[in-house]
Amino acid sequence: MKKIISLFVLLIVFTTCKNLDKKAEESQPKQEKTEFAIIIHGGAGTILKKNMTPEKEAAYKAKLEEAIRVGYKILQQGGSSLDAVQKTINVMEDSPLFNSGKGAVFTNAGTNEHDASIMDGKTLNAGASAGTTTVKNPIDLARVVMDNSPHVMLSGKGAEQFAEEQGLEIVDPKYFYTERRYKALQKIKEQEETKLVKDDKTAFYDSDIKDSKFGTVGCAALDKNGNLAAGTSTGGMTNKRWGRIGDAPIIGAGTYANNNTCAVSSTGWGEYFIRAMVAHDISALMEYKGMSLKDAAREVIHDKVGGLGGDGGIVAVDKNGNMVAEFNTAGMYRASMNDEGELIIKIYKE
Ligand code: ASP
Image 1: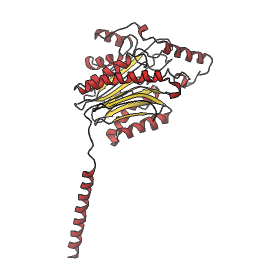
Image 2: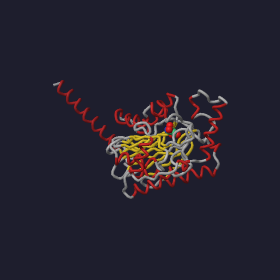
Image 3: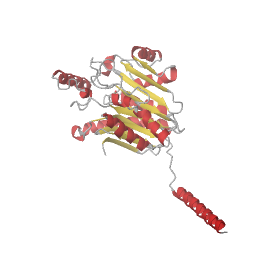
Image 4: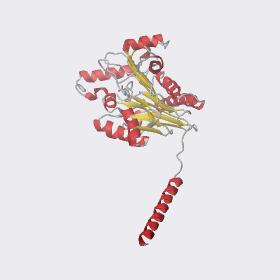
């Protein structure tokens, strides 16, 4: 009898606990899913308020707003995240403010060589182009590589030939010239000559050429159909040599999108972002460890990239429309918009 009573008591305690658990679960606020969302970056680096003029700051903010509103409109009208990403990036590629398309940095040889990539989170299809010198909008090339070729990444002359065949706009390489970026290359070269930065791996990145080493552009978006996409476009790093390719066109490093997790676009010191496989690593932490986008991005940018000695940042959006901008530099040009049209534009660290 005693045994039966004890069993009965245990049963009551167990059922009460289960119900309490259920109540606790129910009292949690329901996680709101955003219908669509878009976030962009215009590069991360030593962006300090003391080096900015109000006019320059206003110009960057205005261009970021112009760009993100293009993507927002596409998403609002039910368009795809892929189109939103591509068209938003086009606006920044056409602006000399950013290190992509017009305004790209110069290589050691005095040329402008562009890298870009785009990825569809629904199908895991991806396209990329590397080292092109005549394609006006490299993100458009990445898109046609994904849509119209059997390959994922094309480079150099072959990529340019494909762009032409696809009817993309081809320009004289002179189109990409900007005085600011050209001067930045000259300054690095002078420093090299005076051995200030010789044999120093920070030659590309850590000299006092404050404005020359950032400005890569990228975008991540979620559309009304729940599809994620991301894209990145860059001129790479000032003074790069020997056909150097950065992280931007490497799927998994500069760009990644997967409807099960998130969409990510990176910017920063490419060599580190390749070695840390930044964009895919964030997605993998979410997929395999069940981490939130925010926690995954923090771990990868601060612990992994930072741990290796690299710097930069990412913008990303998850499948529920949560958006994150994470960086370990002084600043990152960035903007985001949710489905209510709330616009946030920031440059410096909070
Ligand atoms: N990640 C780019 C590269 O290494 C540069 C940048 O984002 O500023 O080519």
